[in-house]
Structure formats: structure tokens, C-alpha cells
Length: 198
Image 1 (cartoon, rainbow, N blue to C red):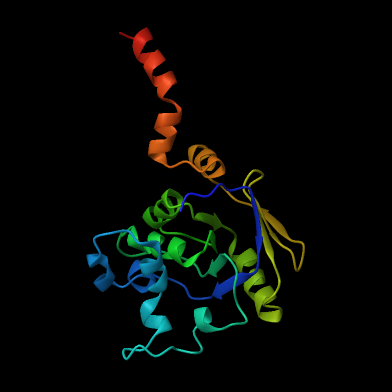
Image 2 (cartoon, rainbow, N blue to C red):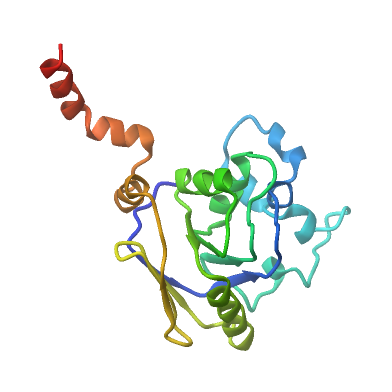
């Protein structure tokens, strides 16, 4: 979903697991879908962790725990490894997450998140550990993600870190533009360049 980014302040959903791969994010059997329906993919985010084979709910999985919520997912190191399926980013966005915080992202998955208006925020391992601790102590604590200033703040402790983002992707997120929108927005500049360089 195209949404402009500015400053997001939210409670968090903690997933303190390392090496979460794209097959765990969205199992391969859901890749047969022929349309990109946000609700379908969001409903099946972490499907095999959220539900048993008979469809019953796994009560102790974090997405099924009512004390956790919000639009920020805090995940362990090496999030989004494995196959390059864009469906994983579709599922994260479809569930309603706008930000994923981790100490390391698989490159392709990181770009897929950016292309689907989910902001991947890479922090130090120490900052990530502190976030998990703060959420454990108080599930209602909030995190502020400031895209213009490229900062993430643990509001429980006041600790803040800078994060990196490609300048082009930052512009697109802040203006709610996908790659096609960006080209259309700059059509007159492209045409002017072509005229000058005939």
C-alpha cells in the first residue's frame, strides 16, 4: 500500500529469532496466488508459526498474543534470508507492518520491503538487544522512527541511533511514490534532457 512516510511512533511486535527466512515469512504454497491481494498475504504472514496444520491458532506465537501490537516488527539478526520472493514483503505490508527493525537484513529482502512501502531499519546488535528488553519489560513501550532525520528512538530509554537509507528510496517513501510514479513525476525533466541531447 502506498503511504507517505514521515515520523512513525508505535508499539512493537517482538520476534527475537535470528535467520528468519522468506519461506517462514510466507510459505511457498502461497506463491501460487495470481493476484497481489494484501489481505490474503497478510493473513498468511508466518502462517506455519501462527497456525497448526488443522488451522487452529498457536496461542503463544507473538502475532496471536494480544499484549503485543503496533505497526513496527522488531526482528532478530539476518531477517529475510533465503529465496528472493517478493511475496514475503507483500505479507509483511499486508499484515500492516510499516517498519521492520533488525540488526541485519538480507539485501534482496531489504529492497523488496522498500519497494512495498515497508521501511527496513538496521540498528546495532546492542540497540536491538535493548529494544527486545524494553518490549519484554513493557509491551506498551513505543519506538519512534523518524525517516526525515534517519533516526530510531527507544522511547522507554531515550536511546537513539541513526540508520542508513538510499537517498532515492527515502525520497520515494516520503512522497508515497513507487518507481513508476517517480518516472511519471519526472517525465518533463526526462523529455527536456532528450530534447537537449538529440
